[in-house]
Length: 111
Length: 111
Image: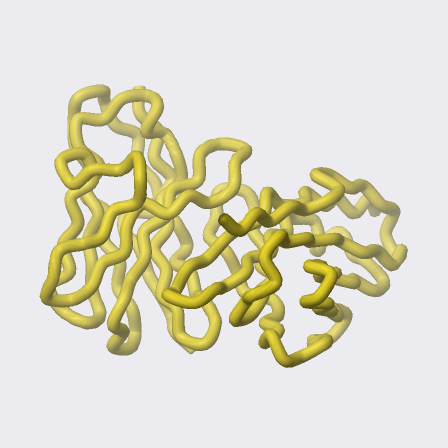
């Protein structure tokens, strides 16, 4: 199994600012996944982060808006840049061993 | 592209009832299927994982079944309790670390 922590757990931000979310895993993993869950919706994959290479972004998500770092096999960050109210969501990081494990999420509200 | 659907979208039952949540998927070429629980504003907690070669998995009051050929899975909850109130999500995993999530069933157990 894997235990995942995320920081911050929640934040309220002003339009036009940026927020960096941290994700820490208790074991070394090759891939880490970042998801967004908008209010009342299911999960949407933002990108897959591999250590030592550029993240792979899904359609509709770009690096300028959601830059990702993956400095080692247990840690990743997701930055939400130049935020607007439409970015208000829960952001989740996850890892997939045989099964998928999720962090507790970061609840972001943009005013 | 894989599509995962969960019916019903919402369900309200009195405490003590047994209930069934449904998950259907369009492409039977899956690696596994996982059921999650999500409390409001929180991350996802893994409940049960069924490999593609398995028919069912049990954990306590929970039983999940898988019929790959018909593209269906069910989550059976026995003797429901108010603490079971949450949103339940199913997700299928396909080759290449592709994950597809259902839209979720919001369960309310009334004391």
